[in-house]
Image (cartoon, rainbow, N blue to C red; front, side, top):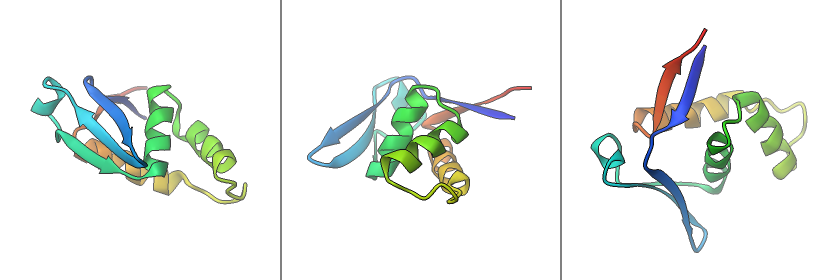
Length: 96
C-alpha cells in the first residue's frame, strides 16, 4: 500500500481565486517553485495536509461539491496525487 506525505516546504497559497503550490528554498531542490492547481486540487491538497486517506477525501469532496453518493472519484483523486508525485510535491512511502 502506498502512503503519501507532502514535501516539506510546500505551501498552498490562494491569490484572488488562483491556487498555487509554492516551494520554499529547501523544497525547490526537488519540485517546481510554483505549481498552479484548480479549486478542487486545492481542496484535495488541504485534505492531504490533514493526512486524510483517499476514501476520506472522496467523501469530503462529495459533501463539499454536492456530488452524488454513487459517483466514484477514486480515479480522479489518484490522478491528482500522481501528478503531485510526478512533480515531486509528494513523497511516497511504502507501508504494509
